[in-house]
Length: 128
Figure 1 (cartoon, rainbow, N blue to C red):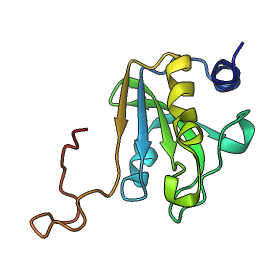
Figure 2 (cartoon, rainbow, N blue to C red):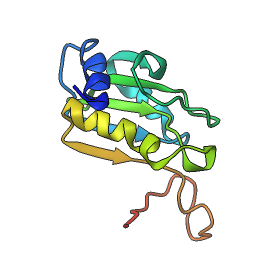
Figure 3 (cartoon, one colour):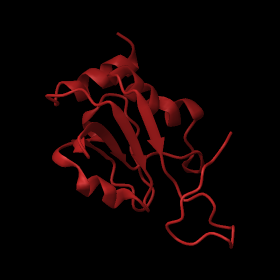
């Protein structure tokens, strides 16, 4: 079993369902996790190999449950390159979510902050 599978197994052991959608919430949308029904909270520290979130507003835990009838796993916080983390460390949670079996990943962040045409809360699509 590789490190992603070990982390996924640790998460799955705490759940009675299989998440289908992964949500990575930045500090601006972190309150969305409060809308998850029947939440199961899993601190990153309880997942083997999971990097710890240290940026302000990044709680550092998974919130798992149902959102609009869809089984989800939500990340409240993540690590960033500007914090000194390697690309492999930054990708660890995403690879873990894939090993857990998610079928769709939604990532949010505060991109677009220098575009004066955007207002707080506007949705934009990032292409790369």
